[in-house]
Amino acid sequence: MALQNVCGWDIDSSVQPTRNSLHPFPNMIVSHAPCVLQRAHDFSSSHHRSAGPPPPEHGTTTLAFLYADGVAVATDSRSSAGKLVSSPDSRKAFLIHSHLLATTSGSAADCQFFGRVLARECRLYQVRNGYMPSVRGAARMLSVLMMPFRGTKVCAAVTLCGWDRDGPCICYVYNDGTRICSDILSVGSGSPFAYSIIDDGYKPGMKEEEARQLARRAVCHAGRRDAYSGGLVDVYWVREGGCEMDPREDLSQLYECIVEEKVLTNKLQKLPAPEQSL
Image (cartoon, rainbow, N blue to C red):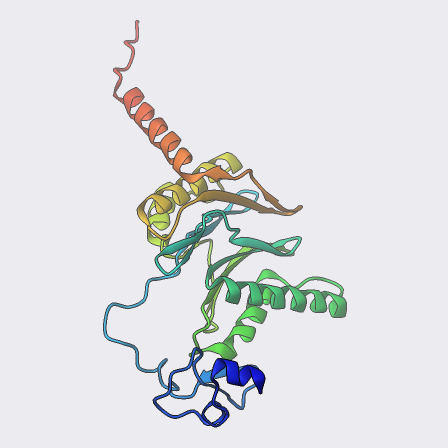
């Protein structure tokens, strides 16, 4: 009672707030679903969006493509919160198990949640059957896990890059349960720029060094053109022996080196060919 007198609290008004009263926190009610909080006066906010341009795509650039020895994977490291850069050096790829790598795009919390759940399900599958599920099987698991969240504000796009008994494989799973498998995949707001570089330089059966240069160049150009991508370039390799990672490189410095190499190559191509003597 003493604290109420000092602060000037009114017990009746705090227990039964009026419609026009001001409170530091919004009134929340618990729905019948477990662990779900909803505003008492805003049930239809998700169904009636305000007029204006559509929300931006996932602010990231991740890509993966098949090469001669497995899967080449590359990501940027910029994490954004709206129009602000929240972290310039975040990790956008993590291991599900020793031969399965997941790259993420969307809400960081949602992606981490689904990644942990998928890792648990793969481990349980191994305990029951004695071996890990295939990449397509893991993608099917993740699709089933995401399907109940269709139509909600959950935002997660996961690319699974792995090696199983059938060899290398790349699968993409979206938060509405969509599942796609392809030899080349790029996800995020910088994916159109990354696709333009990959489509120009990709060849089936590429060697490792060619794949490395192509992956680095694609992320660099995407980070240069896309405001939501940037930071560092991470390159991963998924092979028969497991997953490995190259040292991180600064995107800006790497882009300058790529531009200088291109200028030098153009100069060499313009030089006249040496005359051949008979």
